[in-house]
Length: 314
View (cartoon, rainbow, N blue to C red):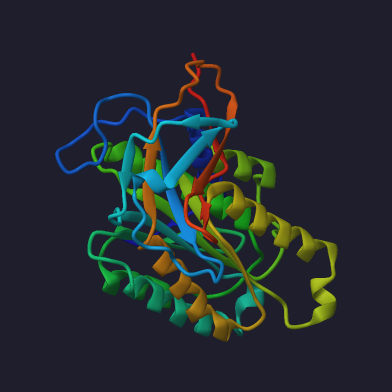
């Protein structure tokens, strides 16, 4: 069902997300789940690439080492089978996107067509307001219809949009605790944020408190002089940092014609991730930030996941 989410509701959703926290949640195992037991577990979606950026298949549990604050952890959970995904797809619909929106829409349609039968996605566009064009569904036809309904106008509230999407994904996770879905946001924007009510720091904190991987696509201005402005430098920094901290990936493109290839890379990555889980050896429930690093025993291969998590608190 299509509906509009205005800025006030965005802030309410964002505040609720921040207050609810993002510490590792209690996992309840079902027969098909790779988790066993009811302990507080740290769950990581891990992307492994070779030196050419290609996915490295065929890895097993002994190939992975997980470190938390520098201390080696015991990998108790491992799966190389793709887990279903709940995805929030965000498209910039500000006035500056007018000429490039049709190409961006076609690329986004191609992306949702690549989702698997067990995946669900939500379509949102944003300018100075946020509109959820289609709530979470696995229907490619409904998703395509929502993407094609997007029209441009207004300014850019990207922080609000990402914050709201984090709240939407939190809602899905709370409503379906029995499902172990990976969660991701894919956001396309062509410039600096000018009208958000929440700050970049709010967005980054909320993202780090979630288990959501954020993939960001910066569609750069064609005029090189505009790219050198402080606003666009800040936009690039925001897109890069949010992606790095959450285990996602950032893409910068100069031409909208490059977008289909970018969306294809993201879809392929989401379909080829490893699931790695452990129970922390640190028993303190102090709410502190804990750094996480993953290494793989394969020459030339690198692993990418979220940078850490906030410990449970008393």
